[in-house]
Length: 220
Ligand code: ATP
Ligand code: MG
Image 1: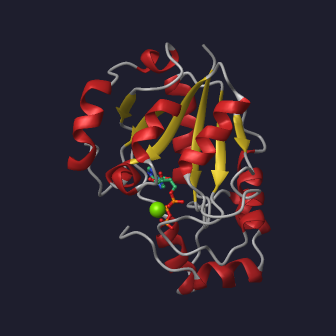
Image 2: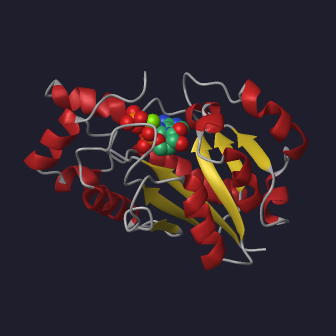
Image 3: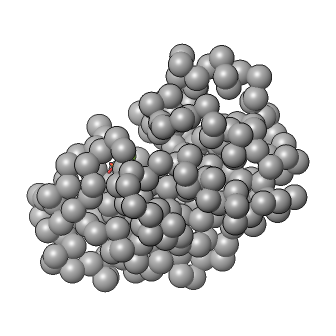
C-alpha cells in the first residue's frame, strides 16, 4: 500500500531538526512522500508573527531539491483553528486508499491527549513518534489505554493498513528548536547550521523582526 507521511508544525522557522525528521522518517518508514504542513492558527499556542504564507515558502525552499518532501498549504487555506483531525480528514479524502502516517516529535506526543478529538486520529492515520532531546518517547498516562493494543513494532505494519497503529523510533538526536533559533536571533547571533541555507539566504530583516517577536514555545 502507498504510504504518505504528514508532518505539521509552526515551523517558525523551519529548521534542520524538522528536515532530518522528514527525510529519515520517509526513508525508514518507506513513505512515498512526506507532506510538510505549516499550521495557520495552532490551538495550543499564539499564532506566529511570521505570516503562514511566508512559513510555507520557507518549507518550499528547504525541500526544493529533496525527493519525496512536499510543502502542503491545506491548513493555511482553511479558516479557524488548525485542528489535525480536520487536516487528516481532508487528506483521507484526497488519498482514500493510501496509508497515512502522522509524524511527530516526542514532545508533541506527550501532549496528544490535549488535541481536539484526539481519539479519532488513529481512525484516520497511523502515528509515528520520533525521539527528541529532553522528551520521553512513552505515551502519556492519558493515552496509554487507547494506545497499548495498537502499538506496531515494525515499520512494515504501517504500510499494511491505512490507519490505526502507532510506532516509535529513534533518530540521531538534533538538539534544535525554533525557540532556540528565535532566542539566538534576538541576541543577534548567527543561526547558520541550524536552519537550511536556502531559508537563511532568503531571510529578510522583516522575517527576523517577526521571529524575534514570537513567544517561546518550548524549553529547548
Ligand atoms: P518551537 O520551539 O517554536 O515550539 P519546534 O522546534 O518545537 O518549535 P515545532 O514547529 O513546534 O518546532 O514542531 C513541529 C514538530 O516537529 C513537532 O512534532 C516537534 O516535536 C517536531 N520537532 C521539532 N524539532 C525537533 C527535533 N529537533 N527533533 C525531533 N522532533 C522535532
Ligand atoms: Mg514545538
